[in-house]
Amino acid sequence: QGQLVESGGGLVHTGGSLRLACAASGRIFDTYSRGWFRQAAGKEREFVAAISYPGGWTMYADSVKGRFTISRDNARNTVYLQMNSLKAEDTALYYCAAGSYGSNKDKYRYWGQGTQVSVSS
Image (cartoon, rainbow, N blue to C red; front, side):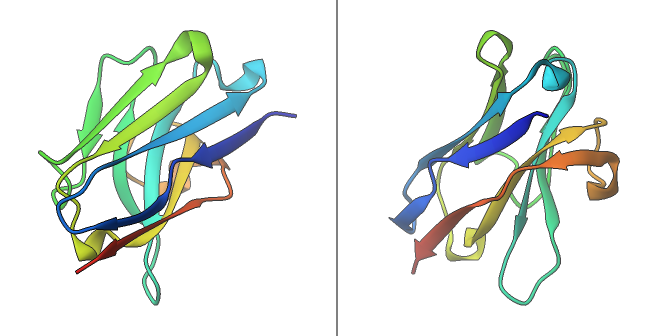
């Protein structure tokens, strides 16, 4: 059975940058679309970004468009989320997912355990 493992979270000041990575083990993820979601305290899990297989299509939440970039390295079975110009409102637990391409979290079958991103004001 495959797994998704996020890394790269941490604490950063407003305006800083982080790059999240999600490594996938197992060939079941090879041709899945991949997405990033986040869940802030007291909030529902929300869409952040998605990328199709093999990577020709991307979509972003309006709140992160122009600041975040999703990419994938299929040879490494890894998807990335480059986060620039971070804001306090970006603070959340970030999850990577694999499934069908889109912004609806219900389309994604597989989920990582999450990595915490905290942005101080």
